[in-house]
Image (cartoon, rainbow, N blue to C red; front, side, top):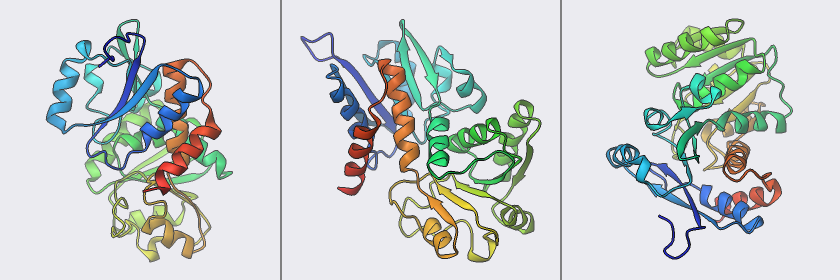
Length: 289
């Protein structure tokens, strides 16, 4: 994939399916441009079968690094040569870097997620959280919260067995946290929400503006909570709109996207990310569509 006649050009990209919504190229190309680096970043939308084929031939791919998003954050792992500790514990990778001819997997989602909490002035230590979903993003969120001393985490998923699998794994690494695996309905789910200081939507529900929130109005906690939707497009999901109407604080996934991208850029380039410029590029890309 290197440009003919320019072996110095480094090529990066993002793999996902679908990818029409991604703004990662705008963020990363802005950062490369800031330092006048001979680097370029593309969106590579590939269905699962083609993605697996590419990963089987990873050694011959002329890429210097790449991001992976839904549904490939767990799929990519067996094809990599090594994982960072965080990626290994989380069981999901979103950033891959070629290092001395070997492919290394990282999870930068947890840094992005924590940056969003910091921006919202929310300290998770000693707090109670409910996470909606049990996929790669939910794993990164669980790791981030547990590593910052959260008191309890309830992982709620349509398929409770998937939530249970996540909880059983993380219990071993974070035994001081009270873990619960729940379905997305019933009295136990309602009770967990009533005690929550933080509610995180780590599912795709909300990407479509018509999607109904996974939490009904009467399930929201009476106490004021922070409701964090990892979706950034649309900027205001139905979940966030409802939460705000009920008096809760809200944040979407824009800050998380920015800072996970900034961390990826640092891994690839070894340079500090130009956050202000990347934030503007991200904002322009989201709101110009």
